[in-house]
Image (cartoon, rainbow, N blue to C red; front, side, top):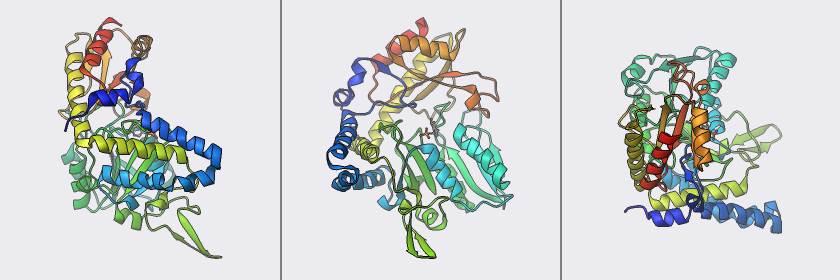
Amino acid sequence: MIIDLERCRKDTPAVTELLHFNNAGCALSPVSVTCAVIEHLQLEQSLGGYEAANAASDKLKLFYSEFAKLLNCSPSQIAYVENASRAWDIALYSINWQAGDQIITADNEYVSNYLALLHLQQQKNIEIVLVPCDDAGLVDLDKLRSVITPRTKMIALTHVSSQRGDIQEAAQVGLIAKENGLLYLLDACQSAGQIDLDTQQLGCDFLCGTGRKYLRGPRGTGFLYASIGAIEKSSPIFVDNHSAHWTGPKSYSLSADATKFETWERNIAGKIGLAEAVRYANELGMANIQHRVSKLAKELNNKLSLLESVTVLERSNYLSGIVTFQKKGIHAASLAGNLLERKINTSISRQENAQLDLAANNTGDVNRASLHYYNTSDEIDLFVNAVAEC
Ligand SMILES: Cc1ncc(COP(=O)(O)O)c(C=O)c1O
């Protein structure tokens, strides 16, 4: 099946007004997502918040069943969390870390994740072990194997980083984690919604993501997947009357499924909106989405590379919708500003937020164009011309 582009663009009205190449920042939601959120807010206004949530119980159940379909898991393995950073932290802090425990990560790690690791290092005296990406932009799997010791407890990997669009070999890392009995935390914030994710194949214990990026959901929404083993073994750092049950004056029990990572109070309209966004993606088919996004990314990568003044940063053959680049003679922020004046949305990745990657090579800030399936070849041509002119 191929994607019905005309329908998708009709469902995304802003595409007639602007060129949205900032899907890795925040994608445009389909109309049905925005309507689902607004309808629920109106229901809250007319019925009351608790009463509206009860009335929407079927829509809320959809959140779990649609994510289960998206990630090939059970609905009971999904938790609603407000964003990817918090979901990643919830997973990290649910482990009983002891001084000297090692956690392996790579130099493409996301800024907030790495900050959390530095924080944990300071709090618990754990050791961060860094594996570099090779010349092709991918985590060096031999090096990864070679740094595992009896003290290693977890591998944390960012599937697609914020500052480079190369897709890491996440399933291979899952095999290495399994062979060595290690926990595996996968940041799928930039991959969920553009790459067909199968948690069984990936072999991860935890996988986190956000709603607003490639999933096209509302802002302030996200999710956490946990394997059955991880749910059983992990202990959330915070509990409330949703994630735990007060069974007697001196006793409590934790929820038996992934709701042990949730909080009772949450953005119900946002959750309904994200459920609709995932339903929309499932209906289009993640394999179809992935195919189209990578085809468009290759096209943009090739066309930008033809400009003499432009250097494209992606180095692998596994391209996601994220294309990062620099143009000679103009700072990334100025170029993004000039493009915005032409109603072209992009973003920049700051060197400061990639200390182990951009800063290590003194690359400087870089421009980031990120495509989704609703973008077109015509838009790519307009974009490349604009970059040449700005
Ligand atoms: C790779 C990656 N991980 C995590 C995050 C954090 O997501 P959130 O802002 O939803 O916490 C981002 C955000 O840009 C990201 O690019």
